Every structure is written in structure tokens, then in C-alpha cells.
Length: 100
Image (tube, rainbow, N blue to C red; front, side, top):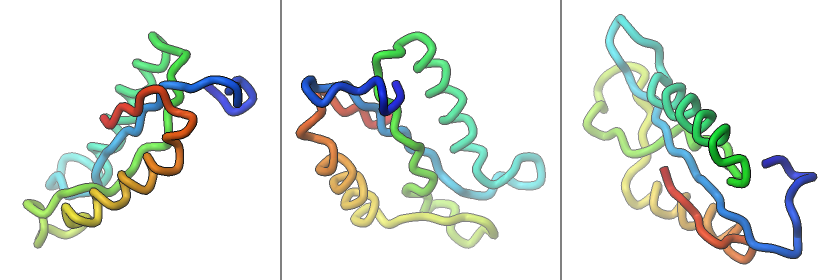
């Protein structure tokens, strides 16, 4: 659902997709998990066009990959705060916020 289609008079169902940026060896690019998340979210959006799909959060908790070149991770505390702030930004207009 795009901005012009949103009604300020009603609450909406939001989806906050979460990917990650980490190494996948020589066979896959950085951001593979985010690319997969984006693909799946696009498929969901086709089936449920009434959902408001937020941009994918490209960084998440990937500490188990630290030490491998290309891994960018957030601590659990930082990720929790980021998700909280995003949800806090939209909750007044949200019926449900799905975190995927």
C-alpha cells in the first residue's frame, strides 16, 4: 500500500521486515538475507495488498558471524531499541505491527 492510499482516518496493519548483512562465503553476496526477505515480503504484498510494508531493516543481530569480513550486526539491545523506535513512530496509526 502506497502513501496516497493510506487513510489518516483509519488504522492499518504494518509489516516491518528484518534482513541482515553478513558474509555467506564465496557463493552469495552480502545482503543475501535481506534480498530473500525483500522477495518474500513482495510475495506477501501481492497476496495482501492492504498491508503497509515498511522498508526492510538491513541490519540485525548477526553476532555469530562477527569476525567474518562483511558482517555488520547490531547488538540485541540496539536492535530492540531500533524496533521499539520504529513501532513507536507508527503505533497510533497501527492496528497490528508484524515484525518479520
